[in-house]
Amino acid sequence: MEEAIGASTLSLLAISLAFVVGFALRRGSVCMVEGTRQAVVLGRTLRLRAFVVTAGAAGCVVLPLSWALPGEGMLAPSFPITLATLAGGALFGIGARINGACQFGTLGRLASGELNYLVTCVAAVGGATLAFRTTMLSVPAESLLMRPTVPGGIVLALFVVLAAPALRPRYWRNFIRALHRREVQLSPIPAMLVVGMVGGVLCTLAGSWTVGSLLNREGAWLLGDAANHADGKAIAGAFAMLAGAVYAAVWTRKFHLRPPTRRALTGNAPGGLLMGAGAALVPGGNGTLLLYSMPSASPSGWVAFAAMTAVIALTFLPHSSGRRAPR
Image 1 (cartoon, one colour):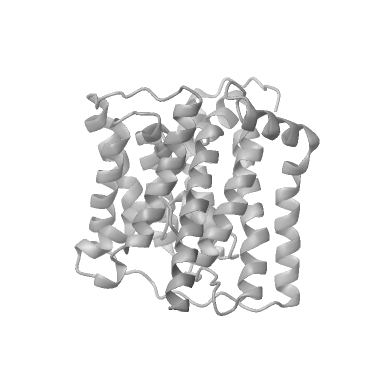
Image 2 (image 1 turned 60 degrees about the horizontal axis):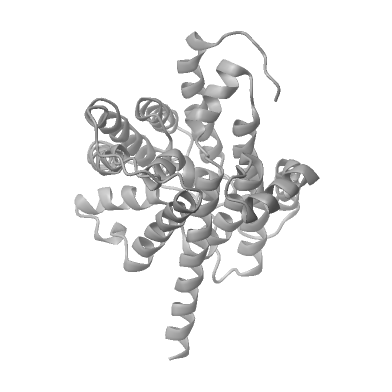
C-alpha cells in the first residue's frame, strides 16, 4: 500500500514538473532553429546562449540528485561516439531546419494552435521507426559519474559556471514581472533556467518525458520492442508538458487555432521524418540531449548536440548580413 502511494506521489510530482517545463518553454518562446538564425544572421546570441544555460542548470540538479539518491536517480548512459552520432545530429538539424522548429519550438507552436506541427509529431514517429529498422545502435556504457568523485565535482563546477549567467538581477526582475503580467515577454535565459532545473529533476527521477522521447519510444514499439512502449505515466507526462505550453499560450492570448496548410506536407512532414530518424540515431532529440544526456556528462550527447547546431548554422550562413547586433 505504501509503495502504491509512493508511486502515485512520484507520478503526480512528475506530471506537475512536466507542466511547469511546458509553461516555461512557451513563455520564453524557445527554439533552437530561431536561436541559431538570430545568432548567424543577426549576430544576436541571447537565445542560443539560453540553451547553454539549460544544460548547465540541468547538470546542477541531475548530478547531485543521482548521487544523493543512488537507488532512485539514474544518469543517462553514454553511447560511443561514432559516425551514427554525427549522422543522427546532422539529420535532426536538417529536419528541424526544414520543419522550421526544433522539438521545443514544435511544442510551442503546436501549443499556440498551429496544427501543421501535429504533422511533425506524426512524421517523427515514422522517422524513428525507419531508423530503428535500418540501423543497429551501439551498446551504451554506464556513465563514469554514477558516484561522486573528484572528476564529478569538477564537472559539476563547470555546470555551475554555465548556468551562472541566468542569475543576473535583470533576468530575475524579468522573471518576476513575466509571472504577474502576461504582456511581459519572458526572456529566454530565465525561461531556460527553469526548464533546465525542473526538467533535470524530472529526467533524473522519472526518465526522459519529453514529447520527442515519447515519439521515439513509440517508433521502437511499432517494430515489436515491447520494452520501449510508453507506459501511462510517460504519456501523461508528455501531455502535461503540452498542457503547460497550451496554458501559457492561452494566458498570454497567443493561442490561435490554425488548421493544417500545404506546408504541412512540404515542410513539416519531411522535417518531422528527419528529426525522428536523427533522434533515434543519437539517441534523443535536442530536448532529451539538453535535459538528460548532456547534464549526465555523456560525451556522445554533447557531440550530437554540437552536430545539430552546426548543421542548422550552416544552413543560415547564406543569409548572414554581416551586421552585428546587440547581444
